[in-house]
Length: 314
Image 1 (cartoon, rainbow, N blue to C red):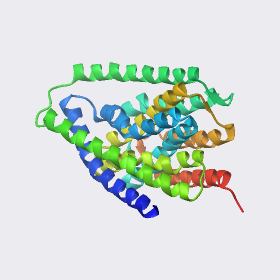
Image 2 (image 1 turned 60 degrees about the vertical axis):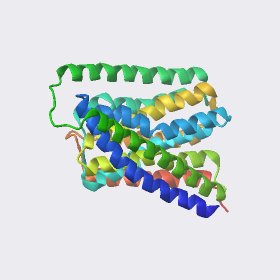
Image 3 (image 1 turned 90 degrees about the horizontal axis):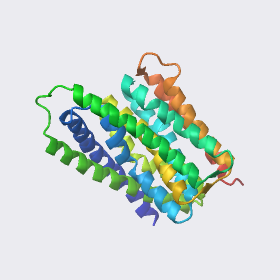
Image 4 (image 1 turned 90 degrees about the vertical axis):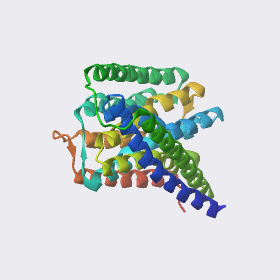
């Protein structure tokens, strides 16, 4: 069984690499064809597609009466997205932060975990709380739609870009491979974790979170290597918004989520801290490599804190 789990991890990583390449090429092609900024495609199409493993895990866990896994996976994935995945991308060669992404997506990505923390002050995310999160998500989507219409009306015709059909085909093929990669990595990570006797919330917040974030990792790294920083950053921030507001909101609406405050405070605190490291101090619109190393250090502290607090000693 252990061999199968490790094989699943390896195949998942391979599928993520190929899928990320195809998906980035297709997403940029769709953006050019539709006369939109690649950042919007990253924050919506790419982010929602790469976050589908989290939605799948959350829905399944909530229907099975174990929404704690859903909450741990969604919040843990947000930490992974910024403090590990974005950090690795920044360490490669730094990262540009387009003004539209900083203005439109970063505040909402930061507001999501803060709102979740406030709603969890009573120890429960009720169905009403879930609807509140979903409502904020739809308000953000409305803003994105308005911006899309403005961009399309102001755009000039772009010549020599990939045909729409080819771009959609590439993006679709890449999306399928990314989803397969997420499922393979999640299956392998869960099997390995369970064999070591690690509990549900810890599995969700660490190994499953890393597994379900494999599509974001592939998309972000390939975007950076291809010179499309806005796609990678948009995907990360859009994925965090999707996880905090949509995924957690859907899970809480299906089954109210009750978890000890200490567990959630740890994950929320590191998630908010990682996002703040993107903002403060940063007036240049560029994330230097040192900031990536700082985020990786933060992620190391997150793993040490959560493992120390949850794994039995002795």
